[in-house]
Amino acid sequence: MPQISIEYMIMIPVLILQIFIFPLTASVIMNSYADSRMTIEIQETAGNMGSSIQQLYYTMNHASMSNGSMKITLDTPPQIEGRAYTTTLTHVTGVDTSYKVMNVTLKLIGIKDQASTLVTLGQNVDWKEGLAFNSTAHSFSLIANKTANSIWLSFGGT
Image (cartoon, rainbow, N blue to C red):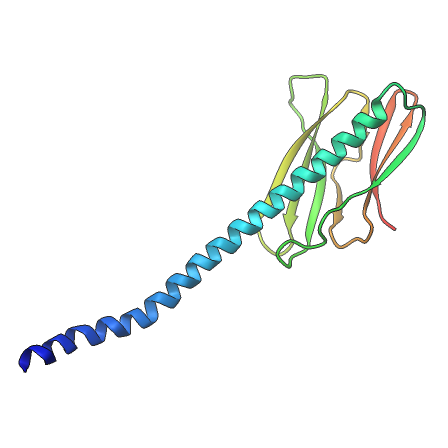
């Protein structure tokens, strides 16, 4: 009989310890998964936005396009994992090329997570430095205005 009580004395603390360790481990794993999912989603959104900007520029820059403007509605989610985000467009400096490079940065509001993508555009494009907007704007659109040999990019909402 003494063996049974020694086994219980060893096993009961181990079982009690498992009651605390398993939920803690599951919580850590789920938080890591949620953070990874949020990072992937913000990176994908930044990439899609950069691709839309580049496609609009190439469309407006084509020789068959005369002066005028074109507007596309960006299909970006208003929130990522329940958080709004800010998008900022800046010029990349120090590039060894005559082409202009745009840095599209998405930053989640309230936390430090952010993602950036670089968009290579031509020589004849410009946009307001530090142009920023919030993701909660409804019907958000990208506008390109072409005059002579210059293209101006801006954002608008309805």
